[in-house]
Every structure is written in C-alpha cells, then in structure tokens.
Length: 210
Image: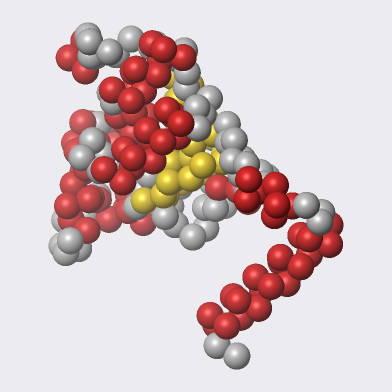
C-alpha cells in the first residue's frame, strides 16, 4: 500500500466512525457553516488549527501560508478575509504563528531561496523594523522566537490597516483581532497581541470614507 492510498483508507475509516457516533454529522456540515473565527496560520504541517484548539470542522474558517503573513497585495488572503468578515461575519480574526518557524528562520539569513525570496522579503522588513531589539538577544533560538512574536504583531497590524477590517469595525463593531504563538515543544498557545474593534492606528492608514 502506498502512502497516499493509506490516506484514502484512513479517510474511509474516519468517515465511518463519525457517522457511527453521529448519523447526522455530515448532513449538518453540508448545510451549515457558521464559524466564529478566522484563523490565519502557518502552512507548517505541525500546526493544524482544529486539532490544537480542540474545535470541530465548521467552527474555524482557515487560511494558511508560509509564516502566517498578512500581505496587502495577497489577493488570496484578502479574498478569504473579506468572505469571512463580510459574509460569514466572524467575530474574531486570529493570526497564529509558531516557535521554530522555518520561514522566520530563513528570513533571518542572507541565503537565496529562489521564488520564496519575494515572500520572505516581507518578514525581513519586520526584522529590519525591530533589528536593534532582536540583535541584542544573544541566543539564536531566542532571537528567532522573538521575531516570531514580533511578526505576529505586525501581521495583526496589517489586518487593521485593511479597508475590510476598518469598514467592519465601523458597521459591526467587529471583529476582534488576536495575535497568538503556538509552542511546538509544549503544545500551548501564547497570546502576544490583541486589537479591539475601532482601535486607533496611525492616521496614515485610516480610511476616511468608509
């Protein structure tokens, strides 16, 4: 049996088990999606949103990319954000990074990673903004961990800079924005940054005609 065939077999076993426990399980999922949360996480396979939060399918709307970035030119992420905020009316948007992130580590080097360079450049900007603090940390792992935290904070700020979030803050007094970091070594989530609806940010980024 090949590795991918094992996945298909496991899927059949899982589906059978779910129906045995709850015969109406898939029927409910097929007709209803009312998540309270949008999760913007890292593509890392060790950080699955549902598993680490103990939630079921349908409870969290998920977008993932390398190093959980909120890039203002990323139409994929922005489309997910607008759908979640405008149509699903989520109450919370969570940016969740994780310690030991490969994307963060790569951005702190001068190595050439090909096309990935263009993505990592956004993280390098975060490093540059906070270079004095990060470079003052002697331990390499601690430096990386701190950049993980600061990157999450910057991505939450990037959310607040979007017209999607600002318009929803004005019209719905939602969503709340959260910056979390997941620990691979202990499985625990650490909140590192929060923004309530209508939080004032720099005037330069606030729209005046929403």
